[in-house]
Image 1: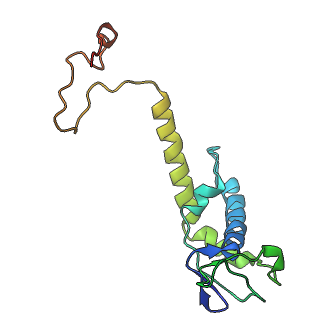
Image 2 (image 1 turned 180 degrees about the vertical axis):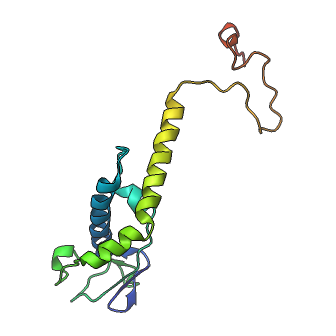
Image 3 (image 1 turned 45 degrees about the vertical axis):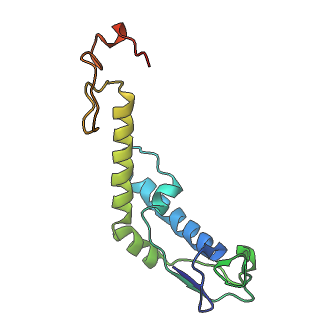
Length: 148
């Protein structure tokens, strides 16, 4: 949800990207300190766990159309910089965002390990009208051929 000079920009824009990138950069620094498991966390993973509300005052903003849904003015032309206090960064890190991202990243890493383990699934379940072959998915599966 974003506003520029009290105008709702429903599609966001450069101002939202600028604030989001700044917040994500600070959260990634906190995550690197807390990440003892060595799980690699990328910025898009943090963005997926975040809700951001931006209300900014910008001198002479430019939009992509008359509907003013997307602001296109470059960040260097905003007229001011978006900086966050140490108190804000601490509040964000204590809000549960860091723990949520870490938990999700560890879960994804674990599922990747399970996928890479090479274990075959013996029976497919939950598919209507599926009549599986008797030896499908077993050690004898290589002896059979599917003819369509």
